[in-house]
Length: 342
Image (spheres, rainbow, N blue to C red):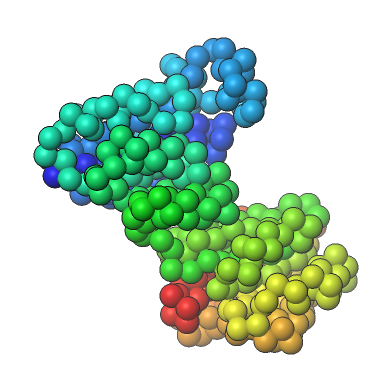
């Protein structure tokens, strides 16, 4: 064995269970491809494992969300990944890092390098990477960022920087970062924002969504692309979005970034295109490189930005009907950002 793969905690609770995140779900296919690239005898895996007394433990008091309780569905490894881990060595661990795993790696006489992937970047991945680094200081250790996800995108990036500082090689980092900033009333525009981010991640970008009252300014400043959207009221953007654009957006260093816009409305032809146009005009004032894909990417065409009709007033409509357009838009924006800044 010259090189080993460590698969950290790819369990249901972290992917689509009690501690699910969109980022965790987005790396599943990458993780499966990575496991397939190694022979089974060179793959190790860990499982976060807690008992029924979890909430009384120190971790439970700090994170009072029951997860990975032994024997539950959430504790099990995601089925399609579990199938790929047959014949591998799996270590249950009651805490973030596995000392047993480190000790087992020390017994491998011909081991020259290990690669870590899995969940969560900022907790168990970084804990095991540093624990192994301490146990085997001369071993080459790498982490594939495209096969990892953090509790939040910001914490994912922070953990990668920590590992770099400790001489752990970080590979597979996303070429660009995308911010999707939105206002919402009923939650529909928030859904559209998440669909755009999903499409951007599918194109290989690091994407995060922020409501106007909770914008991660550092993340936005680091982003290559910023996509802004809001509901339509009286054929105009909302007052909160207009206020944010006037008072906050100009302080985020948006000049030179790729810009885009989207909107939702309650009625077909309710004026959403006017909202998108207004947002794009303000992005131009900030000095952004505005892009929508238009005819450039073929059909379906998205000339100035995607629009969704939420169906509150039109029974024949549903926001879900427009999901493909929002995801496609996010994918196209991410690819364009990669062309410009990747």
